[in-house]
Length: 142
Length: 278
Figure: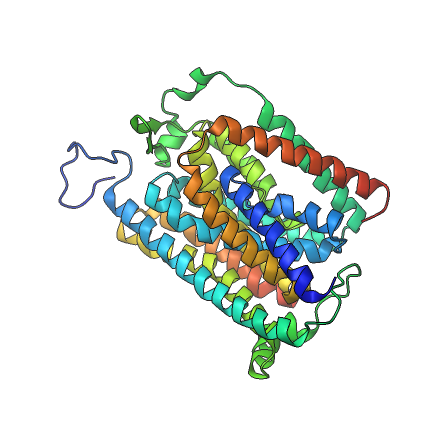
């Protein structure tokens, strides 16, 4: 694929991957890392509150009960965070973590569009549609 | 165990799982679910929920480091994600309708099959193949830095790889794993992509695949904050540490560790599934 301003046969370090592709990878990598670090910070903050308040209770996950509404819906999590609950804060961090790869896919569309790679814009849009259907559709289907 | 003790122990185990998962392209989840259910007596649905979250953290956290090394191939990853995300959607729908003992048995079978396939020998000559027309059209061929400088590779058998990736996605959605094992097999053995490129591209893809089923798990109440917290933080720390080792590590010893661990855990999962402990 020709890159604007570059000679078609000029020797380059990454012959099969143009530099824009590599720059795109770097941007995506940083986006993912930032998302994960913010998410981890939220989870850690929530953990401090949770562990402090439940220091003497036993941990038991033998029986599956399913999470209450406050920990399995987006409005519920926001309500829980506003109420100062540690576990709500953990769930908020986890929601951000789930959103990070989706943001990566969305940004990839921009990156491929800038490279005028229509084939990969199409592929990436398909992936994003599947992800959004899963995220938004699952609440309605179940 | 009180909550703080449980949290500390689970975080330590998760750190080890994340370290191994990062080295092999497993994503950690495939080791974590058996560990949590067998040794910590966690209900497999909670284990799956926590594992899925950690899988996203591993993938996203390690991606930045791999990208810097220039090993992963973003085009191969994005194309194959069409297969993995649609498979993950199917798997997540199925997961809510299958009894937990069946989940454990499927899990065990997947582990054993992965262990078997990863030990199968293949001649090194298969690496230098001529370009495949479809892979060339999809601009998948690339190169990566090796100890002897840039090494280029030609991708083979794209339709087979795509099909295997759909299966990998379905397993990911069903079992809450990144199914890095199947992804690496599809790329390494079917598509003939070099092992290091396969593992890092797999790691890059795993987060997107897991996100495709995480929404379903979240709204079904599978993700418990008290359990997911130490798992996610531990796995993330371990995987970031593992990424620092990967470039220097020998792929031969990696594969041995990889197959031994999944073999033992696979046998355990089958045993527990059949005897009704899960």
